[in-house]
Image 1 (cartoon, helix red, strand yellow):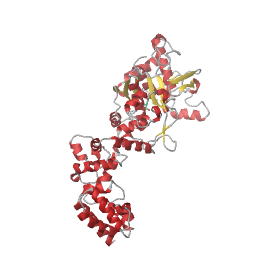
Image 2 (image 1 turned 90 degrees about the vertical axis):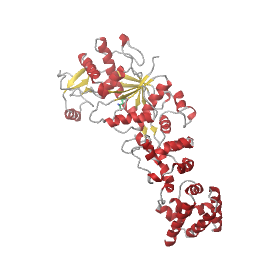
Image 3 (image 1 turned 30 degrees about the horizontal axis):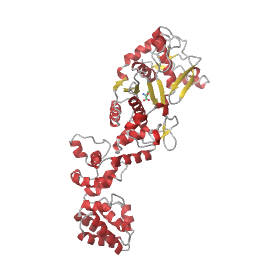
Image 4 (image 1 turned 60 degrees about the horizontal axis):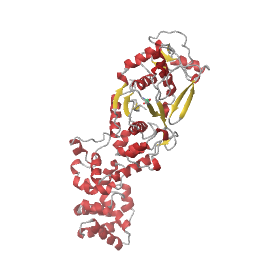
Length: 503
Ligand code: GLU
């Protein structure tokens, strides 16, 4: 068997979609599993919709996910001569005809009951090539079979395929032509891509066979089957694998407008690339034994296209977040501190030439109030509690802000609506003036304060937590108090006490 060659062939028209991430990953896994070559090809022939920044976005997203290509990026915009030469070949062998029908005219004839799609109006008109769109003459009879590793053999009746356009009137090639010329030139053995592209596969096969036949010096059907060289040195057709679509919780196809689909957004919210990559691997395929959290080496060792499921795969953001939290907890504290730095200490990080997510605002405290040593003490406490790195500033801001940001609902719940809260804060203030300043001693002192007020520890803690941190939830209280220091804790208790008493 020849060395497998696969390609990821995105069009640079927007943010990097999680579906593209899954397609890239499956190509990469297949290449790594089978000693193959993973190629990146930018399909940038649509000059109106393509932008250079999206090309950069694709390259960066792949690098972030750890899916660097072995070859490429190749760019279709640099390969125009190859497409022109294929069009010349097909034209000379009679596979194409020129068409000057406007879309309007085609639509009108269709409404009058003609066949679906293009009705072949220009087939025999003998129009000149120059200045006209070029259409491929699809056979009127027979069928075209797509051999797909995931879906089996999918048969298309040729008479249901319209004479499709391969080049616009300005000479620009269309996707289906450029795509297939590239797959031939790049000796692609397996085309692994999204299911929405399945309808273009039979067209690709027709063009492929036409190019083979024309190269042999004659028109008519011919060419090779999947994975085999055909008679007369025809280029072997690739094997196809069309991956299941991704759906949201309502079982609707993921949409750019409605669903959170941009890989860049997950990156900027502090998802770990290894967690996202692991999660994407599960969208249509299961590692052996049904395990979900699987190291990348195990994914590579077990990946098989034949095992990919063809029913739609649910992209479940909750499950992804849960998995991300597990990956965060697997980090050593030092790694965690290093990974979270863009969100808590962007200034130092940028100064050192490190990456900081573009779309993330600065942390809520003034940069000079950040203290790396203090953060290091809090880090193990927050590492236990977050699903994403972007949640971290909100859990530690009370330490780096001069005054905690008082959440109105938290205040009302734990202090405003609790008639015993002021007395409890007062008792805590007096106990904390004296106590040895350690988390354990603070806990004991608070248990005693609670008992004297007839409260369990949780009930005694609530007003203290809100007074000191501004919120009802956060990292463990007594460790937080220890880190904050006696003077600051007393100052905040006193401020809350005043506010509670004056209403
Ligand atoms: N450029 C196509 C797209 O982004 C993919 C083509 C292919 O993988 O064959 O939809």
